Length: 412
Image 1 (cartoon, rainbow, N blue to C red):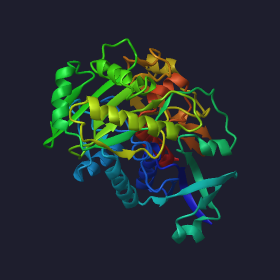
Image 2: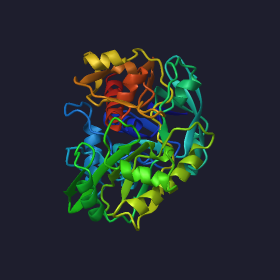
Image 3: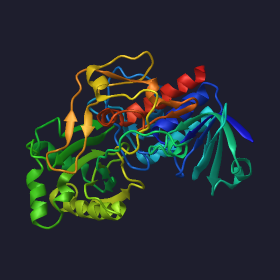
Image 4: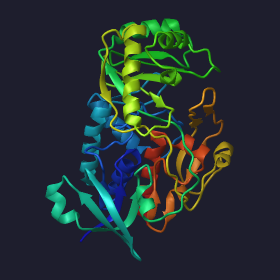
């Protein structure tokens, strides 16, 4: 039976940071990923860019290493606001492969943990592996690990172990996409003239390429510059009112003509969110072709493989981190995250979403990652209440969780 110090289920942002850091600290690490590539929300759900967080953030070594690797191969830029999280999702797959394998992490792609047995001093994990025939004879039956980390996003391992969960609450999901063939120079000049609000619309030149961002929502608490165009698109039957509920776009690092869309936000309960999402994407792309200068010849070049999920299962851990802890900036003995990102709660109702600014830096304690002896959780399913999780679910914080937990495990 193969034995490991740490087995991590889920090769997303938190899982990759944890695996890399644990391996660099001399632990024997196995990373199990259901997809054929790493990166999770960045690569599979096209969540780019990573949101900017506190300048005093901790456990940021992995983030910096990934940025430097991506920047070297043309897949990352630092935006005008100082945000280094503008990544290219396809190149992120390559960068993560390189970084983790060079650190000595063993990676098992297209695999899932089917069963977990808890022993006195270890976990016995049974893995289903349909593709990795070279490793099949070694890993299909079972492996043993001292520490088990659930980085699946949905707490799938904790579910198998019948752990206790916090109350279930939801936010709308989305299905992101990318359009290419955009005349970015033309669009940038037009949108900067149309919208003078630089908190909404901005543009800069990095490495001789134009990078930009803009947004619109159907909420009426802001005078959105793009509102007349969306109203026209609805009146003309090009998009539906639901399509217009949330619209946010960003340039893609390392490209001259690609724009990433943080939408559509899917607000209807449906049995087929992928079908509904792709139909909305087609309508939104036609809207851009017709109404946005520079998009006349643009086309859909990529649709996310997985839905963008803001919150799902949240595990009850050793400490339940609360929104009161967050708002008051409560200090902890062993923080793994320091951030100032706002409490960001999306709603399926008009004028009901909230983006509550936080005026003190807050700390997430290690204890919110500890489920029980030798079982840990990182990523969006941590032990936190609904509002606190809404601030902590961003990519930089997930990187910090994974890195901070790995450093803790290396000391045990």
